[in-house]
Image 1 (tube, chains in turn blue, purple):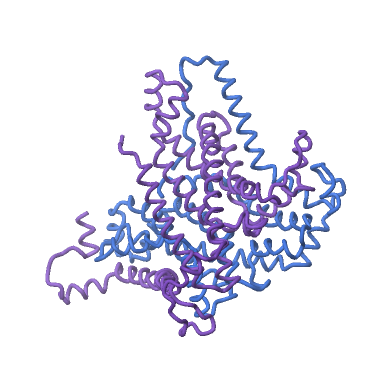
Image 2 (image 1 turned 30 degrees about the horizontal axis):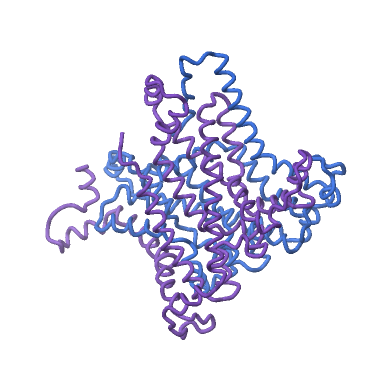
Amino acid sequence: MTGPAPALKPAPHITAPWRNLRQGILHVFLGFMALVALFPFVWMVFASFKPFKELVQSKALLPINWTTENYTEILTRVNFEVAVANSIYSAVTVTVITLLTSSALGFIFAKYRFWGKEYLFILLLSTMMVPFAVVLVPLYITIGDLNLVNKLWGFIITGLWSTFGVFLMRQFMEVIPYEYLDAARIDGASEWRIFFTIIIPLSTSPMAALGIFAFLANWDSFLWPLVVLNTPDKQTLPLLLAGLRSIYWARYDMWSAGSVMTTVPIILVYAFASKYFIRGMALTGIKG
Amino acid sequence: MTTTARFSGGSRRGPVWDWARIRRVLRKSQFHFGVAVIVPTLIWYFVFMFHPIFQAFRIAMVDYKILDPQNSPFIGLGNYQKLLLNPLFLVSIKNTFTWTLYIFLFMLPISMLIATTLSNVRRLRNLYQAVIFIPVVVSLVAVSLLFRMVMDPEVGQLNRMLDFLGIPPFKWMSSTRSALAAISGIAVWKSMGFYIVLLTAGMLNISEEVIDASRVDGANEWQRFWRVTIPLLSHTIILVVVLLTVGSLQEFTLPYVMTEGGPGTATYLYNLLIYEEAFTHIRFGTATVAALFQFVFILIASLIQIRVLRPNWSY
């Protein structure tokens, strides 16, 4: 969509040395900002390999005595693997189902005609205006009635549909030509087949954007899991990390090890797919 | 378009109870697909959206009894009264407005500046953007822990850097005076990348003809920024302003994890009040009333912002 747009053409009256100096200043500024964004993580990674005493005393960035104690201790003391498994399970489930529901509804709202369609769409969209806090208590009661308190599905089930996702997919699917669908229908293809073999392949870029969006939102979700999931065997990663504050009060070595294990995998995935992340965000912004 | 009408069958005139036609529709694959998608959707939206929203209005008017919800006594506006009498109510409102103000003061100039720089730089743009975006993708709770370490008044790296530059140590989150500003700085650092991506995409979308025309007319960079870039960016700016407002007014995770509202009540934001009313003090009614106030306020605020900022011209 928004490919690498050409930089603005230099003004003709500005001479080359000036232009270079100007570009130089821009690079210095952006380099500094990039450092500001990156440096805390670099510090955190090195801090996680320092013994506690050194972490709170030394001024050096690099550890003097490298140690992996922090990692072994945190892995034996708290249910780290369980939290990782819970987080991955819920984030993947929510992302996959959200993609399916959003694209199917996007298809219907973009290409079907039936009585009350526009009203239904507006009704669904109107839920986007309601802050989460309004449904916090009633939703907790509902989850209680469904017997899902302190179960991973109590957290997952509330994320299976995404109003924003429906809106986004409809925006994109509106431009798919009707001729494609009609040609397939004349050939006798069922709607399921049209959906899976025509609509979805034509919508990969908004789906990638929505998938990243849904995954990150779920991976990072805090308030709702905090309310529905109570015991250590059900916690997701953010809950476990927040819990480190009380289990290891001011034990910065433990904190940094836990944070590294949470953030570094995401940063690594991001390093290889940053293009899609950024394009996706820009896409959602432009269309949304 | 006519072909669509034929295939999706909704627009032909005729008697309403044309059984042959209804049977034809019922046999269609579109109908099956539509029902298979819409019916679960309606059930989910009813159970997890519409029903809770209606429940919220009911819970707001009863003294909710957890153990026996059916017999919760109706107390009308009693929860409203209880909430207004809670001294933390006004404190949290004041804090939340201050917080939103800080976010705007930090976020808008910085992200505009970086976006402008990014759209003018000729090389490495994608690399800079990708690096500045990193904080957006990592877990907010991890970021909170990270900055609690970095901003520790005694052993934190930030004060050591200040020390290195000869600046006396700063108390960051341990002082009631600086805590809210310090945390809002972290919030800006964390989500800056997202707004920068939106603004940069918007700026690069401005057609070069307009920029060239302003050059021909003799506008300098400063004039071009205020008279060309900003007005042509107004749709993106509206989006950014509304997202920032809605997000800041609902901030929860950062103050909860970093300071739990403290020191004192310095970072006690509105959503902390809602959460504590509901799940610490188990006062479901007042929590829901507080949430309804927030709903009304956010709705009005966003409508006003869109009204005021929407350009009254088009091009």
